[in-house]
Image 1 (tube, rainbow over the protein chains, first blue to last red):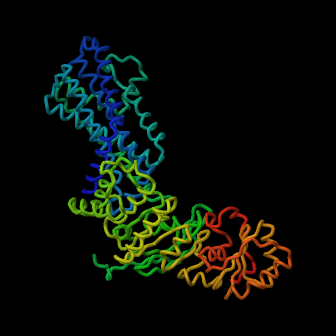
Image 2: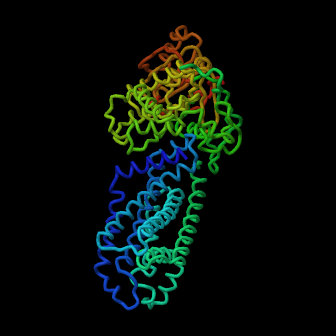
Image 3: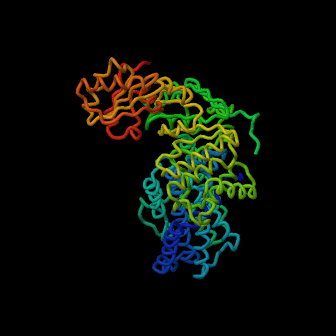
Length: 253
Length: 336
């Protein structure tokens, strides 16, 4: 465990030394929050809409921060492979998993900090969290897990391709998932059949719904259970993919 | 610091082989290196040196065969091997965003050292490799090539390894940095009894540092012994003749066959191997004069590992021989 902590610390310190690796991602999330909240807030006046539009659109900004921030894990691994430091770490008695887990967990911590920042901005804009401080904390936990899921995917792509551009492109490929869902209006107002099908099979939908329940309507056991199950399932899947890729990458070929 | 007399510091390999598709990068290598030696592993680019180092340091699997380092099997006891060895690969492995102290401390802690101890180790090694006067805030990415190489060597030493692998540690360095690395390698071996496995393209490096030398070519070990033993194989003394052109050198090569059966041509030079060189010089000069070949220069010297390399591989190391290395011809009459 100690070697994992050491490598998490190293990745976090490096991130602070290169703030430009995270600032654009924060800017995009805040951009989503301001633009959609001010441009589409009249959606909240539709009959049957519960809560505020700020509470409805905030999960979009959070998930966007999580997906973008997760790419950091892949970037760190690729930089390490390129500059030979990955091999240097493999030549220590450090467990192979720690070499992969260090950047993955560090990336999830960084994106959690971004999520908290975005949520604090939302509070400053007048957000009232329906489920209270515990609900606020659960949204952060969901974002962390969702980030870990994407960090696993980013690590998998980095270790398989060993190519920075390919890994970055693979991460961006997941951005459409944010929009193939009930992103801007509740599902009752979506008429396109294809979008309903896409939203139903898109795991992001269930993350949005669980976060929205906490922010806008209060404690909803079903939405939370589904949201956490989907997040855990996705994180487990990508975690296994990353470990599988790591087994191959920790021996040179 | 006491020598780890009781600890195994040997390196062995039996029929070690690594294939990359059709290419046999390492092709049936056998090694028996006792602890406490500096072992020079000599060969041109692509001969299989780095592949062998990667297998012995556990980061590459062998296709077949067996190897042990410090008494542990590299395939089955990789963790134990890594605890016992220090490695500085040909391509340095540094995180460019970290400072030298941070890199050294992290490396020491990953080897299980406490934070306080890691700090002391970092300071000690910075002095050892001559980087203690560098701005502590300077990140490794801003270091020169020589400084990076020295920092990489320091990283390999944080846990006082029993066996140290140095893969072409001085390639691309200026003469001063090269001399500093040589001095440090010699000190580590003398003071700590560390076994040092050193791959190099530089004959002079192997000659000056190594107790034993192996020459690898196309994945196979083609000669092995002390530098002196290897040099004796080609003769006790060498007469080097220089000519105006490679055509003259070739004519001289043919003309001198009866006088010097043991000879090699390299571009505009001819190297002739004798038991006692001086006795043969008058006859050499007469023969060349008789054939109308103008001699530009003549020197008598001791054989070098270059001569050994040329004899056993039929090729010269390009940077040592200089221009026209591809023009080198190993004489078929050189005794085997």
